[in-house]
Image 1 (cartoon, rainbow, N blue to C red):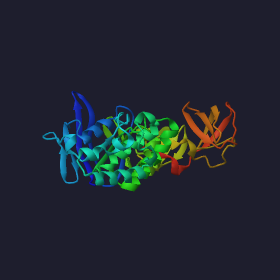
Image 2: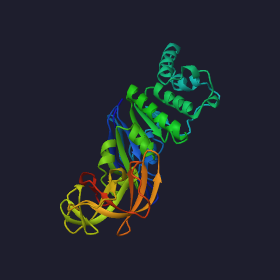
Image 3: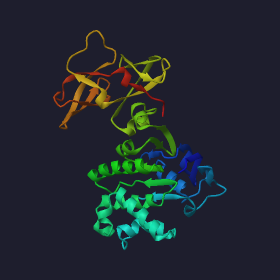
Length: 355
């Protein structure tokens, strides 16, 4: 295993910039997710790492070996990497065992070694009972496990996954997230995983690199990305975040419709416009007006309410017509049209950097 390092990696297609000066280090044994919407540059970055395309600028290092630069790019077959695609890419005329052992056979390993490695990976991937079946006889989840086993059995320096679960239904996707993480914990290959699915990234990753317009907007652990988004884009993309806009009163308070709201995060500059994120499940909602303490208390009107079983999802409207989402316990039943008060905990009101 070896680390993977991107240094100022850039890819142009004519005047369009697909990847824009990306620098990122994946330590050996880490699983890093490139997370972002379609067109953000995550798959292009993965293809650059794999050697399928050449960079316009920057370098890719694996350990102490330079694999890509504008001057020279090592072809894919010269890199000790395995890649897993969303389409599985299994040979339809080969059995599970033949598909999984294919990489070992083209490396011309002796039969006892192939048999031993094949038996070990089939056991780990829970595929022993399916060894004699063909891909057409397998479910989508089983096919993806075969694809994973085939990639892992050759013991790559780096494992690359491109939207590996996008063709699975919701239940299988959830199951396979944990399966991928289980196999990663077992083998600890240096892994770069591309997805647009926030839950997938949160479940599988050691680190998440949120990408936007070809750049890494924020890099951090799942907890850091979720709890301390640095920008409005990250807060919105990770999900469940309301964005409130106001004017800074001092270093840690803003005014929203004349109400002071204490914030956390970056220090503020008095008089400057500020965007603040607060997640919908962190907001308290009540019919009772606050007492003398009005800081972080906003008046609103319920516009819509949806019963979700384990919770109620409210859309509320502030006096300035700003709409917020609020998630409350199912017993908290407030009808549309009613006036409510919202409590925004200061420690959950995160002042964001400007996009």
